[in-house]
Length: 63
Image 1 (cartoon, rainbow, N blue to C red):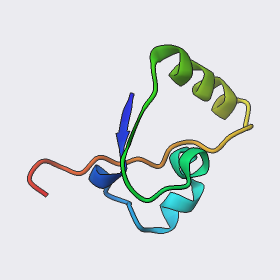
Image 2: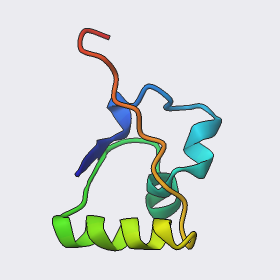
Image 3: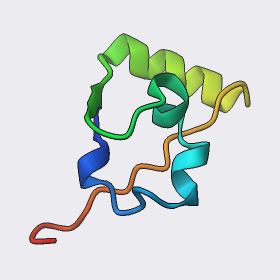
Image 4: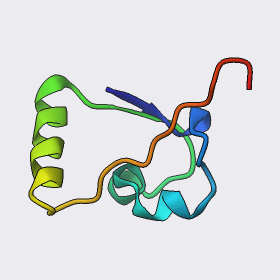
């Protein structure tokens, strides 16, 4: 899973405050790459209500 905040439709909105990427990194720019095991662990924590999910919404091509 690749999450690039530079390419997120909801960057710099209130959605960032509830995004796991903001929580984990607390930074404004850059990309985050989770390997399969990390993604599985994050989804397990999300399913259990222990961490916020990602609010990542990739921009459409050409934007």
